[in-house]
Image (cartoon, rainbow, N blue to C red):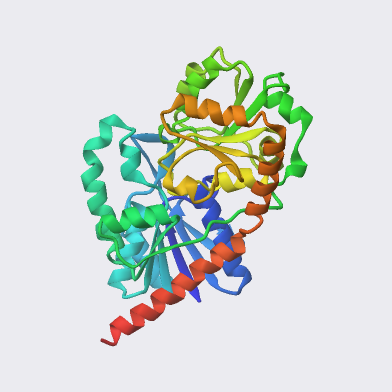
Amino acid sequence: MKIAIVTETFLPSVDGVVTRLRHAVERFTDLGHEVMVIAPDLGVTEHHGARVVGIRPVTLPFYKHRRFTLPSPTVDGIIRGFHPDVVHAAQPLLLASSGAFAARRQRIPLVASYHTHIPRYLDLYRAYRWGKPAVWWQIKRNHAMAEVNIATSETMKAELAEHGLQNLHVVRRGVDTQTFHPRFASEKMRARLSGGHPEKKLLVFVGRLAAEKEIHRLRPMMDRRDDVALAIVGDGPFRGELEEMFRGTATTFPGFMGGETLASAFASADAFVFPSVTETLGLVILEGMASGLPVVAARSGPTMEQVTDGVDGLLFDHDDEPSLDAALDRLGDESLRASIRQAARAEAEKFSWENASDDLLRYYEMAIEQHARRSHV
């Protein structure tokens, strides 16, 4: 199969979308499929045997930390030259929308996937809330061109259906259980992340430091509790504000981490904390679980699809400080913490990137079949 993936983000960027697509590309090429990725030009021209075609990016005023590529007519010619069997438009809003329109013009089967809940994010950026209806209009228009639409959780599938998207399916999540593993725990890393206080309950957050991650909601907790140390791992546009906000508390900002260093950061903590309720899934939750960590997460539909309270993680209510404190107090129960660690690791072992990527292949085949039937009507 010849597969064209048009995406708003790809290597060397690091986030959940890139992680999923990177593993998918690796799986597809290993199985003998021919893959081309069209993405913002960030210097990568090849990945695991797949050609990566870069389109010149720009810096958007409301998100200056990452470069995106606006819709481009160049995509049509690139896809026409490649002549794929299927086009996958990942988050078709900017560049990826050009992939969706190219597929429609050239009568190529189209799969569109929804990864980032932009309308919900706009609620957190007050100056841009006015654009929410226009974004929903764009989402509905672009996804209407696809034979198959993909969500990353049942919760998002239901919400997208309420907004009129059709032919919706859910792709499984995945995690690399060898990269993320309890064996990477390190006393040296624990001392670093805890600011020299390894005796405290060490909570780690890992992700892009942006407003939509709602990390600021953890600030009151750091005032109330002297038994907790917090490590905020990552980088992003909100980092400076967060560093100022958490100044004077037992909080460290070790910056961006990757590879075995990141695996050690996970495994060396007592829990992974996840305060956001805006995520469409949150693959990082599964990375924490694979590291043998209790996940202390704010209740949301996608989070509750991954975490069972008191079994493989601990849930708290968004905007409810006593609820968060109660979850942290439960971490003090050694037998409960041990059982959650074991259950979290066991849950993560059920998932693999191979299976998640094979889901995508089945959806590609479904789109090709539906396209063929529609063409013969």
